Image 1: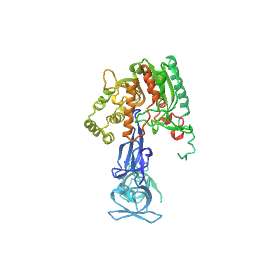
Image 2: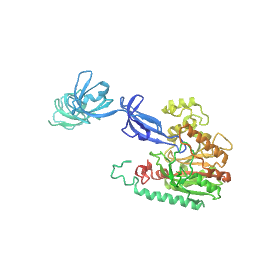
Image 3: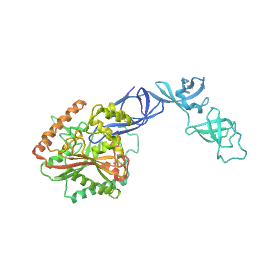
Image 4: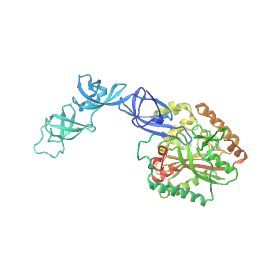
Amino acid sequence: MAKYSTNEFKAGLKIMLDADPCAIIENEFIKPGKGQAFNRVKIRNLKTGRVIERTFKSGESVEGADVIDMEMQFLYSDGEFWHFMVPDTFEQYQADENAVADSVKWLKDQDICTMTLWNDSPLSVTQPNFVELSVSETDPGLKGDTSGGGGKPATLETGAVVRVPLFVQIGEMIKVDTRTGEYVSRVKE
Amino acid sequence: MPIKDESAWQPTCDLKYLRLRAQMLAEIRDFFKQRSVVEVETPLMCQATGTDPQLDSFSSLYHFSPKDRQMFLQTSPEFAMKRLLAAGSGSIFQICKAFRNGEFGRFHNPEFSILEWYRVGFSLPQLMDEVAELLLKVLNVKYKADDIYKVEYIELFERVTGLNPLVFCQQSYQSYAENNAIADAINLCGDDHSMWLDFIFSYKVQPTLADQSIYMVYGYPAIQSSLARINQQNSAVADRFEVFVNGIEIGNGFFELSDAVEQEKRFDKENKQRQGKGLVLVDKDELFLSSLRAGLPDCSGIAIGLDRLLMAVTGSSSVREVIAFPFDRA
């Protein structure tokens, strides 16, 4: 893998740090008029998701990380692994619990998501920003209530729990913003 | 540099800032006219340049058949202006471009505007007062005399960190770094006292200098004396100060070193540091050294970064916002 100098650091660049793949968020050049130049860099550890700050001497080089994003289709889970497929090539990947993390609660079979691969192994899975899922369990709503105020918890077919307006019924499809975990609307089938 | 962006020909600064820059320059010239300080011009391209290992010059070849001659773009007009002072010019100022290779970021552009001036017969405190007057004039209604703080480097450094900046105790510096989220300093700075001071000052001290403030920090540790004299009463500190507007460094002032022998020693020492870092050695500026031997009058001088000053005037967060065409659009 290529090496990158601090001068090439920019948002999105993937580098290796302490043996983990990381993505650069922000890079600031710091130099006192009569002193040593540093680069103060904000970095996301792609394995843990944690954001850290590191300082490099300006001009220092670090190893790049072989990290790519790929659209994949979620196939099924066997309990231990989650299986995905590249639609164009039919190539399959299995991701473990660490890689899929919270994203699985939004994924149902056939859904397309973004898989991040590190050295060709699944590193993380990112679900679409919006998903449409059916309600499998919720308290029966009050007839005539259309205000949406208040709300109630509803369990979706994937197991995720979201707050929905009182009028939402079991079996209905709803649209959810996965970034906030919030109900957006009902979906007409 | 490949240009993909069809709008990249346009200036990055708001056009009204062009006018504010012109106004700032006019105010500076007016300020010095009232004080009978003469505006001068010196070459930006010279046969020699500074030895400071922290500064990297642009160089170019002058085609002078049969032998090319290497020329350097100046990192500041200091040496040539001191030659004028030695020749008897009296107090002088210059507004020009300065060039520093490899410095590009939110607060840096490799080609930038500088205001440099020298006051013959001024002590450092006198120059600090004049800098304050100039800044209040240029920053006009935005800042008042109450916003100016003069503080000793040692006092400020100790107050913020509890560390003594003059005495290097690697162990206490390291434990400070560990306990204050700058553990990277331990490997980067190693046993380099000066680098530790730069690191801690940049990360921990500077951020404590408030918004809406003009700080003049004086009495830098002697190991960071640069081209300043060592203080006569206390040889552990140099007669050097820095100016910070809203925590951003905008200038460096010295009671100027005039001892040719000491100056040559510092050049040699810096070249040795360059050698240690694997940098190219820089020829000493012999014309400048000759002028010191002929006699530089006692004087104090300062260089101020005008792009950063304009940032303070306009409340900008990056030099891009005040420069028409920064490096990547030059």
